[in-house]
Length: 180
Image (tube, rainbow, N blue to C red; front, side):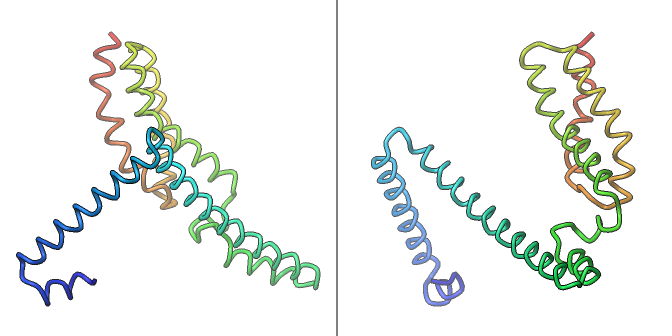
């Protein structure tokens, strides 16, 4: 049932009863699934997620293979220029990356990943009382950010860096105090 129809046809009390019934059903199904799979309940959920991910990756691979096939066909028929224009319009490379060197973006992406991964690494070092290592990793992240942030902003890519950086930057006092 669509939510709008449920609210149009039923009172609030009836809707609450429906919700409670659905929640009971969901709990029963959850318990039934747990009973069926026993200790491997989490494994089943992880497997379902993995299967969904594999299906998505297969669809992407199929699309890429179709594009490559089209490009090869165009190249074989002598349409080299058409193939390159269709490649830029139909590729998986975002429009903002076209015309720039792939290596530059690869390096930039590697730096962004290193910065984003730093927060987890710093926490890990701190949990293991490796405060000097945490401070070194934080300094590396700061240096990488100073080098990388202007390029990220000017190219308009990797917006997650802007969200992740305050969390990493916020660790500086704690990391350096414990490293003393």
